[in-house]
Length: 154
Image (cartoon, rainbow, N blue to C red; front, top):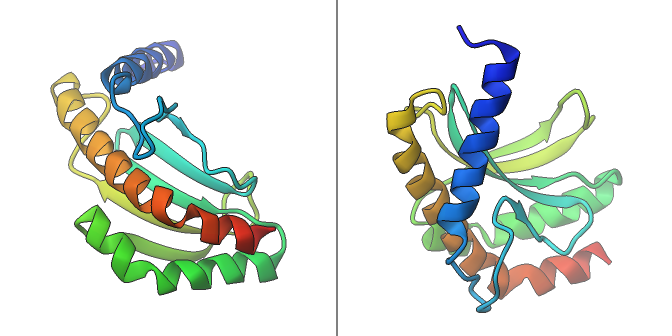
């Protein structure tokens, strides 16, 4: 069992290594990107990367407080579902009306590998490769369709 300090150090080292791993990867638009804090350009849309003891995942979260705005963006994503899943090369899990301690209601699309663990160092290269692949494919999709989402969010 890990102590809190050991977990914090492991996660800090893991994300620093991932940031280094991704440092030479350019966005679809040819820019350097902060892949860990992906810039959605919409204040209530978050593209999150996560890894823990239960797996590695890329999440597309719609956290608009206004249910109507959240519903419009969610509907648009459903209209783009075939294009998104074609670009990603796999289906995501579409979760409507999720809840967490910090966000009362949000919608999420998630791509996940639950067979990996941040606590197994031998899994780190596979986690990095999985997250990079998901991010690069998502970035290609998002670069093509973000303007639609930005206009809907305005």
